[in-house]
Length: 106
Ligand code: FES
Image 1 (cartoon, helix red, strand yellow):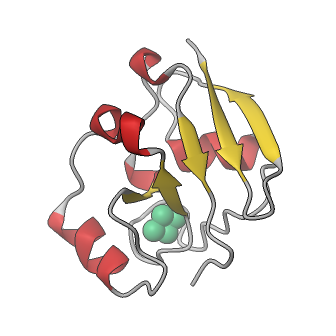
Image 2: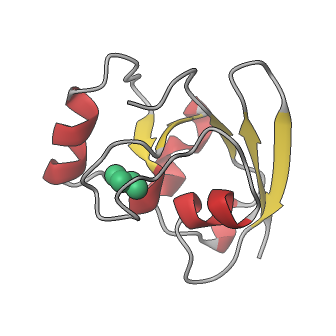
C-alpha cells in the first residue's frame, strides 16, 4: 500500500508500512513509533496523537472535523498542517508522506 515516515522531534526517522483500514495513529502504535500517546484510543478526545504533516502532503490527509479542530486549538504546539493522527485513515496515495512528531503530546 505504501510507506510513510514519522520524524521525531530530534530528527530520528521511522519508515513504516501503511495498512488498509488503519489510522495513521494505529500505524504508529503498531510499529512502536515513539511520541504518539493516543490516550483515548482513537476517539478524538485526548489530542495526544498530534502530528504535523509535511506541507506538501497535507492535502492527502483529508479535512479535519470540527471536533478535531477544537482539540487541536487547545494545543500550544499546533501548526498549520497539524492533524490528530487517529482521525486520518491510511490510503495508498499517502505513499511517501512525511509526518513530524511534536516534542510533547498534551
Ligand atoms: Fe486521542 Fe487521537 S488518540 S485524539
